[in-house]
Length: 291
Image 1 (spheres, rainbow, N blue to C red):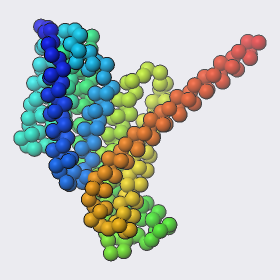
Image 2 (cartoon, rainbow, N blue to C red; image 1 turned 90 degrees about the vertical axis):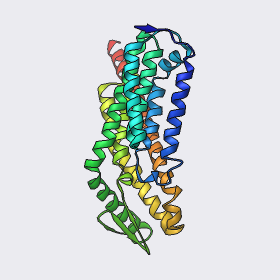
Image 3 (cartoon, one colour; image 1 turned 60 degrees about the horizontal axis):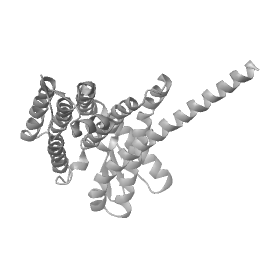
């Protein structure tokens, strides 16, 4: 069964308001949101929708027919997830619901040939949410311990003494705990998912390019979160604990995530240039042999 969408921008406007209200509820109106990296999933939602921007633009303009059956199935499932997240409350369910609702809107309002994009949004959201939800709970403790140990050694060797006892850092009259959010485990899996999604934008990447880019996620996430821990220790020591554990703590989590994305983008660009240079060198050598 098909429908002809009218005023297709209006459902997307409602979706944007829902997403903004959900994000504001767990960030702007929640002073403790910096204790978890889960709000970064809102950033991933935006990135996924940006990847499918051409399909969404078509659905906004109402240029085609959508599939009512599959679209409403996705909308219904997404609405159940979102409502459960609101009632529980559970941010992870709200974000998952937003992914699936966006997929349902696209499946309903965009032409049939864009159905693959709708299911891509739903599937990517499901995978990203589940990975970002389960994996950090299982693996973050060891990484937090390593981050604390390295941070203490680096600061002690250059600035002032810091002692690491497990995941607790002791310096001067202060102490700081390297939590799950500061360890970077959430960022690692979010960046992994994003790097894989990012590859969908182009079919020009070779298999070795993809493997190198994904392999860089772990060191990039660790290094950026190591910088976050060091900056928090320095802010506590030189400015004060109230400043370091307030808005500065929350903003550094977002900042290092964005920096990690930019670093991965630069690595991706470098790999493109290296591949292009190698290809040109190979072509030149081949031409010389022909002569």
